[in-house]
Length: 317
Image (cartoon, rainbow, N blue to C red; front, top):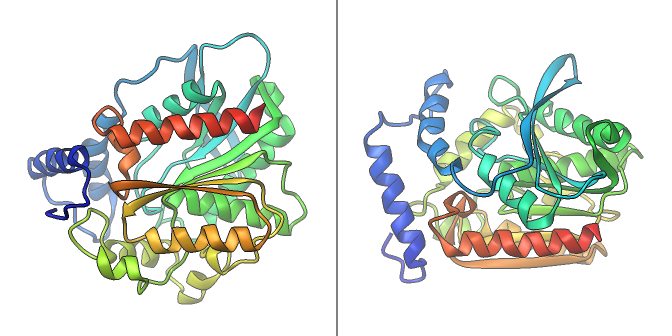
């Protein structure tokens, strides 16, 4: 990564991760996917260490679409009474990562915004193709809105968020429930460097196709796993940049500058504004896709969490 735009701390973090990855067998984009998932977890789990301690952390279970779905639960050190809640959906190309790899990020949001964070461990692709993960996340959102008080949550102060494929699922779930007339009164959407379209020919795909972490080849693989039927890749719930976006709550978009997904994130900000949605778009200069996993290493990640914490607190007020 010789790009002079690259943040020096981001460059050092990338070099550290490359050195760690070199100690492991190569992660191959091939099926079956159990071994690649295990290697990815081994690489990313150390990044979830440290960070703020919670008053309560643990796993809860919900009956969702015929199975028991695990949800990571983090309640910060706060006063008594129901807390607002951020339902946060982890990224990983729909194929890997988990509530474990994103544990620190969820705790950081809980501490920064003074809210409970709930993270669903949704079904991964290719075993569970579109729309299973989307429908699972939508059902968790509906449960929190209807019965979150049972877990000490305040369902009247609810924000939905996620990163990368998780941001895709968050926005897709909001659209699905909106169209069904069942969208809870969300206070906001927190969307971090999301996957918003299945096109692989945007300007940022051309500029950052290789050499910046997330590659065009990987995104093509992820799309084939998540939406093996080509017609599903243009469905507005899978590619929400193609959706009608009216009626959505205020949205914070956090965009990595040097990211194959940057173009569709900027386009999403424009499309949301054109649909009458209040949007704050924040560009993290010098960063690559997934920079929020670099908490404790890259100041830009910490600044992004702090900015999101302020935005969340304002939405919850």
